[in-house]
Length: 276
Image (cartoon, rainbow, N blue to C red; front, top):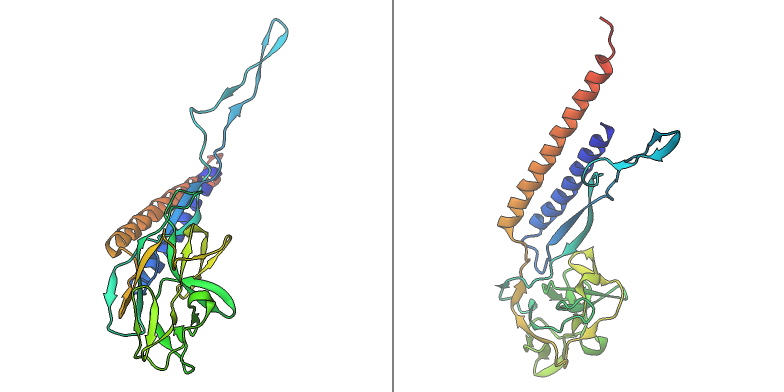
């Protein structure tokens, strides 16, 4: 009986967590470069129950052990991890010259996972390296190309991109032309295994293990930068709404099971063994 309480409660908690993840995806459906999170549910270790006994035969004790049930007994479910979906989002034209969209054409496969790598803008965030797909940039008072939060957009060899004003142009390979001179080249980082990236908020990713190579002059990587565009989030609003409804129904079903167990326990405590 108590085991049923724990199973139903764990199901409710897992569906609540999944609902929170889906709600966050929906809230960022219009955030440039946002990558939708996917929840991975996993069951707790299966419990195997076995009868332990013995049988008396001719004065000897013979073990009489057998399994209870044909399969293991489940002990609940939980959200094991959240994994970002790094698929390319659609491009949206803004007409703003400081906006950049990173169009990923070709990336090499990771030798370990055999899955495609990912391309990202390289940033300097308080002296540390971070990555993003949000190309909604601007120019600060010093003429440096920065994100909306003021983080520096890094160019080739880790240099900042400094321009005189916002009337500059960017070639498809990331070369920035400012009043006829080359102000630098926006660096694009190649992450062999994007699943090692950890979300930090504001569209930032931190690489947890390994190093990021530059995709510039890399024959295995092909990309284009589109000035005046931003990459939209890859959140599918319709499927997210459907998943939210499914998670709600699953939460509701576990809640009803929990209520049924509660009524059974109440009846057992108040009526079983009562002397009339």
